[in-house]
Image (cartoon, rainbow, N blue to C red; front, side, top):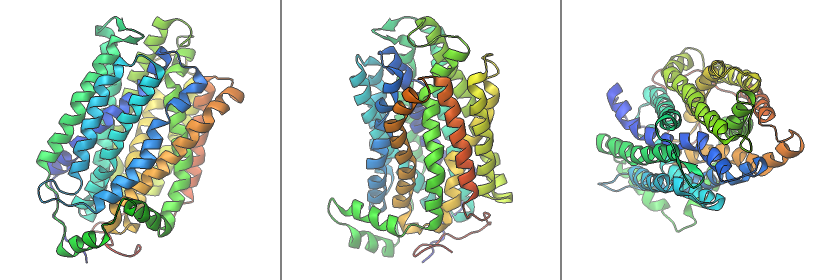
Length: 445
């Protein structure tokens, strides 16, 4: 049975996605601040990938389970997805507040596990929330508005590193005070933005038939695992094709985030974490500005990508974006003028907008409505498994094949994005049609 969903105004779609801003602020700090904190605490380059294992592991363990659970949740007051937003945002806020007080590598790594657990508890139900609320013809706007807030949140996180560095001198132990300012601001943004969206956006109550299905399928502790395995068994071909794209795409992105500060320090300031600490701090601040810029490009381009995806196809848009990003990363470590770094990062930012929204448009029409949550969780598994592979393998690759050279690591990432571009070209994905209906049961069209 197809449920007719009311069209939402643009302001309603924006209010619905404001919470994504806070979630992505903390993700922005993970991109630009976590690895420098590890550097400040004395980590060696080949240790960094393993210290980042928390993110993908919590994503793999938590998101699909939370997705399956949220599909089977309904409370007349709290709704289906909102309880998960709230718990996740609270965990994020607490972890962000405590994080700068880390006195050792293992304390920092442990807090990262808590931070990522909170992020992942909120993230997946949020994507399913968009699919729940919006009619088919507005889903492109919904997913790409998430890209907008992704860019906005990560931009503020990154720029805050540069700004606070200019106005908050000194340090506590090994951690500069400017890091405290960024994390404290993130703690407020995380819970505040999610509470805003929760207060402004009611959820659509399930139909009597959907309630009956929920009650029939509620099981014990193993129910989510059974649901995930059954969904993987029934997974449409286009999602298997997307998994190959994601293997190279997300491996590459983790290589960039782990090595960006050190690459900039090496090419522009001619130093390293083991060299002049003041110069390296300047490189970290500039990395925040560079990453902030690419996220500005993300939210400026996000809505334009909707129109391009509708006019041409999501597949073509994603191919072009990955091509531009791959070439940009291959040029990145060879740029010695710090201002010229913004050029390749502009293309990277447009590609990041595509990565955060376009792949969902390529597969959403093939996913049955009543399984949105679990399939969004499985898509996240496709993101985090390449990250886990990267965390477990790249330290060895960096030490034995790339001479612990962060510039070579960025070039490596660019090559992997070009491979992801080629894998996207192999996908079968049609154009987005106005008024396209989403199937509520069975397979695709």
